[in-house]
Length: 110
Image 1 (cartoon, rainbow, N blue to C red):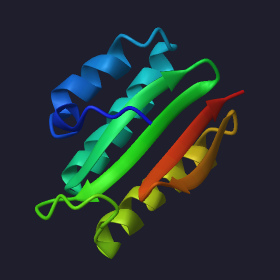
Image 2 (spheres, rainbow, N blue to C red):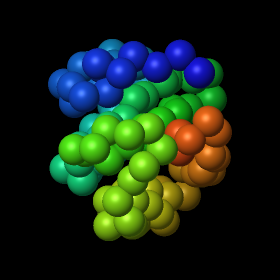
Image 3 (cartoon, rainbow, N blue to C red):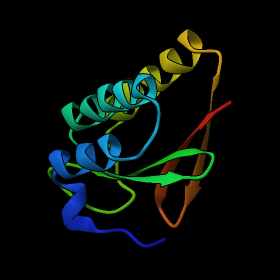
């Protein structure tokens, strides 16, 4: 997985990727809200736009910045936001995968 660590620390760069993704405005707004929630919970993350949706890669909690190490509170808040996103929009489907000490949240739009 190719990850730009510097980008992960800059929420504005990630928000720019989401804004220029070509996704419908509705999904861009939802993803921007989710990215703000991740940033507020002090988690380093990155976003990859795929053909069938979006992949959000959680890397580490701040300030330690050790790959694969997260605070429980931060993950709880992020997963709550993802669950609410999926609950409020039935066309959205989410999956979580752990790979190489990274947590990947896949968001698919049906």
